[in-house]
Image (cartoon, rainbow, N blue to C red; front, side, top):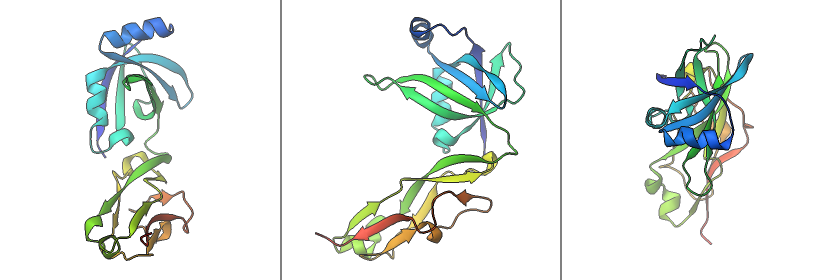
Length: 189
């Protein structure tokens, strides 16, 4: 998995008014924490951050954070949370979590359905029930898959795909029960 380098500046946390000023300067207020370090208030360039999350990895992208004037013990981070403004839906704040590349982490990976329009169950009028749009997995940060693909072209009405039926790459452990249903095709009503 590729890492994305992001330049940041340390900032003095100072409440809503200062955060608005940061956003006016085309920056996002953020905080970085984890691995025994004190939380550090930073600001990151909005365009560079948006470019980072629009890679194939999406929100699971690994970020090498370079903070101007501050030396971090570990510089590899992942996005822990993105807070959006409820009115404008623009990004208000970002939480970065420092991670070690040798310790396993828990992430949510999107599910992608292949050839759903060719499934006999759908052609016969069945309804698709995607129970899990994302699957929580545990793996090393360098092994995070971009997506989990499910082939559906042979699925008939009343067929289901369980967690135990998924083919996951080596070193990736699914945190759902093996009997959990991920996807099903129900008969028409």
